[in-house]
Length: 424
Image (cartoon, helix red, strand yellow):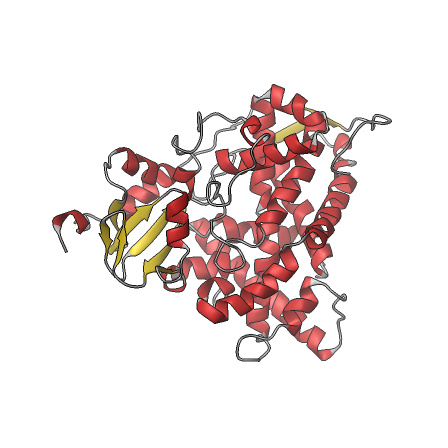
């Protein structure tokens, strides 16, 4: 190994925890070459970014994702034995189940219909309340909507919403949020494993064509059904990403408050602008900082050696703010996507690559569709924004609006006869 390919002696894990999303962009600014080299958790680490790097990273001949998921992430966000822990044919067979549920116009439309119905029902009650916290309300709306769509019966939607939020909120941090996420996962897996057993015993009926039915009946590469716990893990991986859209809806409130011109444009009901707004939310605001895997063999990236076993990071946040890809990357401007929709490997808030063949999130289409539907609905509401802490600390993983975005005196305007509404 030559000097240029040697990792630093000092471990950067404390710096990552201190700086969060800005750690890798800061390192890029101090690096002349095509990679950033670091040491994380004792491992030689190489970070890449850019569309070509996306294709390189998601090539299973280059990078293996399964071995790179640390135990704290599996015990909170994804779950043990989840699809994210698989590679090769086993991954493709399990992933096909998710693709059949989460992609395609019919599946996406079904989820959007359920969620928007719950949104409209819930928002109608907001005018009678002194204040509404957008993040909290949206998490409950999305929980009810996605569980209705998935065929999962709910007894206490508020508790389930809190637990699903906790899974996302605590995966990347030590301390109380992390332990709250672990306890939430235990509760959710226990609840859904029992539901799977009840469906198989015939005491509960899974709606035909539902996600619940698909997971219960899924057979893995070995031809066997998933065990109740593994099925519970994958049911959570169906519903959790939808509830995570709470982060983006709250960011939408933040964006519309600070950019009234965007709000007015979104109210006009132009479907192309609503889609562009959804893409710009996902590009501009922080979500996943990076994804990682291990080098399968000795690799070369633009002349740089990446030894076998190296931890390889794909810098998602940095790529979404790379001035080589985006004009004025730290300016929120949906117009950048009106004329030119994003290329697959340029905009990577939820990972990159081909969702059918790789590890890209299969729920990305649903995220975009939900934001396309809910963004204009939020823009059409009238409300006051009281004094509150609207900062989004980038050293918090995952980041979120501190106050949750409080709204007061919410008014729901009556529909305008003949007005164009692309999301009803």
